[in-house]
Image (cartoon, rainbow, N blue to C red; front, side, top):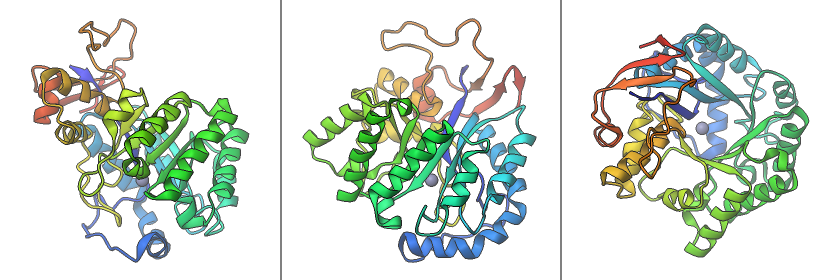
Length: 341
Ligand SMILES: [Zn+2]
């Protein structure tokens, strides 16, 4: 028995899952992808409630009982992607928890998304999203200032996509840290998804930035990329930065490789960072649960506690370390005491 899993970065609103499989179409960088989405989204929205429900069932079959979903808010979808996803979440609410990020996928200013974002911010969403301010909107300050103001005015958190890995990425991280320090109400509820720029900092700058992120209580959400770019997750954890993971894409126009399992992400992290001992493997479980693990570092049981919600999974493994190293089969998901899967 382990804590149920949480997928902390996914796009439930615009998936091709449960529809005809299609390979990705790379369409000339981020702006080419925006143009592609403007063409395909109206069609994708036609059955997006159904596909979101099927995708939620996939996540549940991998032991996930909660997701933070980004949802497109832009002039093509307007608020329809949000409305369709809200229907799916309503239908699944007894068995699946969620929080939503209003995501200006086509740029706050690159397309005229701000009026829709203002409307969405007043609705039942939890975070103001964002996307590569320099590459998409052409300015860090203008876009981040607006994002911060939307969050403050509507009492929401922030969770921005930041893929920019060079100087503009570093500068965006520094600027967001500065804004959170100026507005302590945003501490603990501000997140940077991907944040690839952290992978291109030298050791001293990385340690300093990790400390600043930790002090500002800004979390990092990583899909655990491998290949050319390896995220410095062990360093972030050393400074107690809140690191969480998610599948991001399962099957869509951006990527078709998502399994739906966050336990697989914990396994990937263990492999990437050489976490092979029983102790080290067991620590990686926190990536799948977004926090809680049964034993503290000193071996004292910390989960479950009397009075906790009955949210847990049953898994074919003898211990947390085995579950992470084998990506063990999840045999059951229990949400609020009800057997869901
Ligand atoms: Zn994303």
